[in-house]
Image (cartoon, rainbow, N blue to C red; front, top):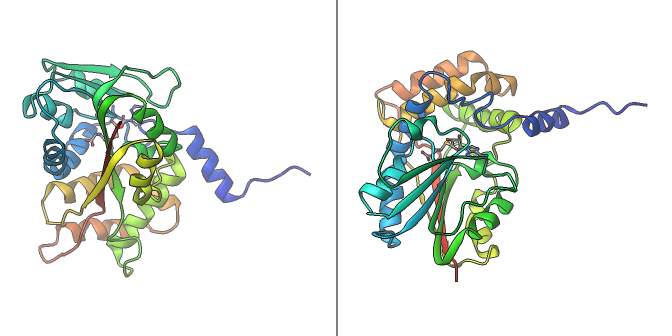
Length: 275
Ligand SMILES: C[S@@+](CC[C@H](N)C(=O)[O-])C[C@H]1O[C@@H](n2cnc3c(N)ncnc32)[C@H](O)[C@@H]1O
C-alpha cells in the first residue's frame, strides 16, 4: 500500500523545496528592501556596538553573510574603518544599488559546497542561519573561513517574549509566524539558545553571548518591521490554522495602539575567536 504523507511530512517537504526569498520575503517584491532596513534600524546599534567592543577596526578584512541591504557591511567600512567587506547574499540587488568603496557584493548561495570566499578577520551573519537547514554545519563552515585569531559573530532571533506568553492576538500571531515560516521555508529558531555551545563545538575560543530584546513602541522601526513581516508571511501564517485573518488584523492594530506594551522577539548574538 502506498505511504500517504502526514501533514507534518508534507510541511517538511514544502520547506525542503522552498527557500528564503523564493515565496516569502522575495527581494523583487515592492518594499522588501525597506522591510529589511526596518529590522536593521531596530538592531544595528546593538550589532555595531558589539563589533566595536570586540575590537573590529581599521585594516580588518570582513565577510558579511546574508548581508541584505548592507547596513552592517557599510557600517564596518564607514564607522569601524575596515579595510574590506565582502557582502554575500543570494540576491545582491540591494547591495549593488549603493556602491561603496571597499564593499564587494558577491551573489552566492552560502549553503552550496562551492562557497569558499577565502579567509577573514571577521565573519558576521545576522538573521540568516535561522532560515537555513542545518545551522550547526553552517557554523562549522563559517568558522573555517576565519583567519587565525579571526572572529565569528552570529546573531539570530530568540523568542523569549511570546512563545510561552498568555494568549492574545499579538502572541498568537507571533506563534503562527514562527510556525508558518517553519512550514514554508524551514525557518527554525529553537536551536538559537544553543548557538554559543555550537561555536565552541566548531573549535572557537573565548565564546560569549548577549541578548537584546527591543521594546515595542507604536510607530517605531521594530513595530513597523513586524507589521511588514506579517504582511508578507500572512498566507503561511493562516495556513497553520493557529490564527485567522481577523486575529492578525487585531495584532497589527495592537502594535499601533498608544497604550500597548510588549516586547519583540529578541536577538541573541554569540561570538568566538579562532585559535
Ligand atoms: C532576514 S535577512 C537579514 C539581512 C541582514 N543580515 C540584516 O540583518 O539586516 C536574510 C538575508 O539572508 C539572505 N539569504 C538567505 N538565504 C541565503 C543563502 N542560502 N545564501 C545567501 N544569502 C541568503 C537573504 O537573501 C536576506 O538578504
